[in-house]
Image 1 (tube, one colour):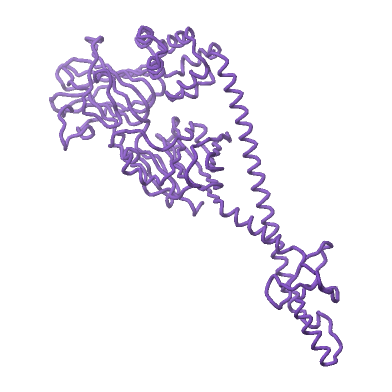
Image 2: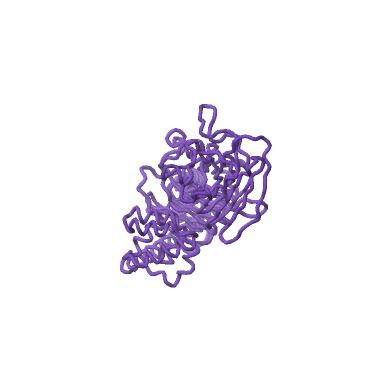
Length: 535
């Protein structure tokens, strides 16, 4: 486990840090998704709630008037009592709630797509007015309400609601703003150029099973994200109003891509490499940063992330420098103007210390003694003065330092080997990154050229798209871009089921002159980019 990189202790309130700050886990405490129907239920009245999108929503009631707001009374503390826990994914769902005539009981029946559940009854103890309450726990969804006695008349929601909810069309439509607020966490140190970060991502347990719908957003920020505590409080506090985040989105990993090992590498000030859990490599061009580092910011949704490895650039530089130093030290000495005595190569400068012996290697790899020339001259002069026979170099300097020199040489060889190995691994890794980058650029260029030339064609995927499209956000975006008329919009939106709406929308798109590039951009903007290959 990495000891060099951890998560910062500052994180969103829906994030739990553990394992000595090396693990960050999505832990929902507050969603700020509470809302209420404005008017209380009348005896015998049935309210029909229509849900569209994906997520988890709790439905219940409260006997406190939600329209009375004060400094001590907020949407989150109205004493709501939960009755039903609803979970759905890209399905049109309906919940009907009826207050019986004596105000002692509420009945509820839920229909998910074409499946209908049995009716459930809940007793009410006090005979007080009852308001329907909803709590959008997580997900992106849209909620409408109507009464059975006058279905053409839309029911309004109370203006006292959580910060993660917005009301539209005269408070008759409620939408969640984010999939889950205050789920931001970031590393306690920046990522430098050349650094490699590896972390393990896994789904959390939901009712004893791995969460099916999950995601992980990888983002970057040039400054220390702690400064966002004042600039963008909604990243850490769910009760704050949502504003546009200043962090830069790099990639959103879906359910499969966020289940396993993920690697990040800052290759240069303008390039970040990412490898997902499915071994899918991607390169991301980023705005040139003013420094040689940036901060990694993660946004978790029903996943846990653990840092498993952090390899800083300094480790590689250390081996590279050691290699270069060892190569310099192993160069043959300069023997100009000196004699070779007893098979020994003298040198005026000793690499290890002055006036002591050291070792070197020549081309035939034989071990030869390197002697300081001044030391040899001093011994020769002494022999001449004393008229003693000249001793060999080995006799003059002794053999004790020979074993020490051999040990030092072996250590230097081992260091050189390690340095060369690390250097070659670094070169191979950079070559692989460059090769992947070239392949990705070529593929993107080819895809872009093909996309520009052709119009959308989804006939072979018609059945799949009818089931998978999230119609209303896509319909809103097309209308906003002036690509469909008001008549087209109303005709599609008024269909009874999501299947009918999707089928009508696809027929409408087939009649329009829309290019592949334009359609891809629209799908990305409504978070349905996974359908781009179907068009």
